[in-house]
Image 1: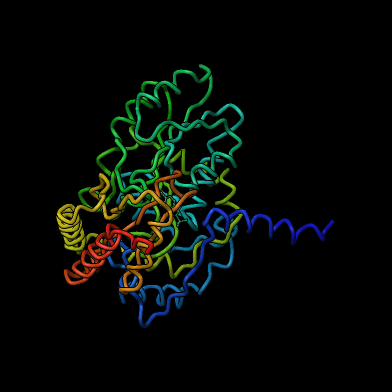
Image 2 (image 1 turned 45 degrees about the horizontal axis):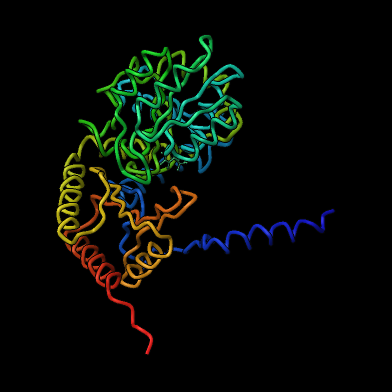
Length: 389
Ligand SMILES: *Cc1c(COP(=O)(O)O)cnc(C)c1O
């Protein structure tokens, strides 16, 4: 029977190749890195030497690794300090660290669900939220993207006794649009549901102090379950859930992806504390980012590029066709510009796109180079094909 495995794998590979969806990794080197318009380092903190210093300090003080899970003896002073800072930033009573955002979403949905629970998700939610509902074994429904009427229709159909959880990205990772938090909170309230928002791309970027699209503006009553990640604007790695004392204690007891994993390396926690200090001390990073977003949108519109309706650092160009998205990304790569070409199944069929991301670390000349590259893609795109003789 073991002999079947190679042919099974080959079959899956053939099917994916046939769809033109085989994916490749590129190995980045620290030296001649291309201009990065693909990453999520929105504030330019990932390469800040002060974070690297803090990481080394954390490792010297506490060790390179935490050595154990949080519930055994891996929960260190530096983790505790970071949880307190994250709770304060988001205006919640408590926060709980997870090793990754993927695990925070899996763990939260699993711990909050049982056979009775009904989960309602925006159709464009991040894969980790969709996978979390599967792990939870809860009945899960997807509402049309950002469609509150559709959400309410589904909520109204749930059995009267069923505990309900409405789940949404804060900033949608492939579209860059921001969820209507007050609208979601009101729909959840009307139907006796809890609201969970994953603000992976809003934290550090949106809100008065970089506290995200939920943050202190929408407290624990409106958004009882708030998830943030640390590997994007904060430039490090890991994630957290913020909410009431009771929610956090519940997750510590019942979230399996929290309980059964080694605690975050202490150097990462120390570097994240430094990132939070810089978030507060250097608001000019956010101002710079928003100025770049405004300039990009203004000039891309003049070039006639297919902009999406986004005011965040995620600026997709909707190209539709998979091959077209790949061709644009390759042409840009040839000019030393790294831009993500996003194809199904990450986005719906027929909605392939370039996912351009902006960062406070970009200079005006970097943005010039991007706009020139995009203008060249567009010019090439519309050139009439050579006709056969
Ligand atoms: C990136 C992302 C995650 C996963 O976070 P990691 O820390 O990278 O595992 C979860 N949710 C959203 C919306 C994301 O964009």
